Length: 325
Image 1 (tube, rainbow, N blue to C red):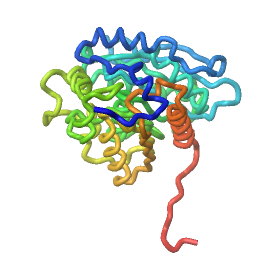
Image 2: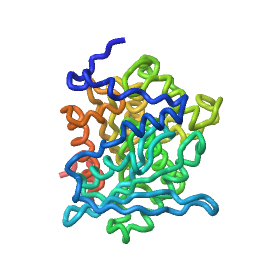
Image 3: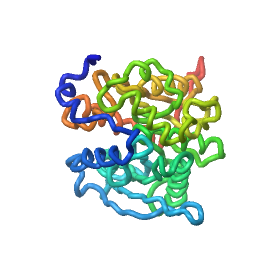
Image 4: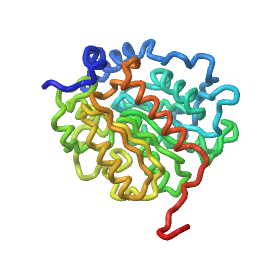
């Protein structure tokens, strides 16, 4: 069906094919080709970059981590643990390099990019276990990172956004430490696939309903998706109570099957008393931000940077009482 795409995006939508998550080796090869040369311009020389491994459980390989520290006086004393997208099956610190470098240079936060284990070889809960380990490591090594341990947030795009939401839930339920802020970009949140956008957008560029079906089957295992026993740490939309979560920025694209689950999660966060900002970008589709020179893509980056800077700054929220002078 035709979609009213942004006029700058429409002629180039075919540049961003949906990923064939039913054929993970082919999807990984296609993703690697798309990632080549994608690093945003203007960040070279603005950040110091180093790589290391974060320990996991005994006998399990370390989590690859890449740290991006703004140079000179640009640091704000905050950090963001960044979790890459890729449908739980694709990507790593290399494919996230451009985004992580940009976020560090533009927000002033130290960015800790995590290369969590991928499905289907490593199904749930391996990825979230890795992300949780990296968040705890960042808090425990705040002095080494040069940041305030109380100002470490978590964020990600697509599947990484869903993992960021899961890290926040885990942190709350385990009694902390809790992220100072969460960035959920086009997040993957709900394995039940019942929203109106999920039912309608079967042929959208970037991502289709069928791709999401395969994505969840790879992550959860065959026959698990949509069942009664799926954990909220796998599909955060299943969490019954969203109170006590950190301030949140949620972004969604108009023609994305994931759109309505992002909107629903943001609405529930607000109802639970969580400070939440939601942006829905007209004429966009999943991963359309790869077309970086489109004005709507630049706006998405500006809004994300602003939200992260605001979410991680050291400022107490003022309370309001009726009749106060």
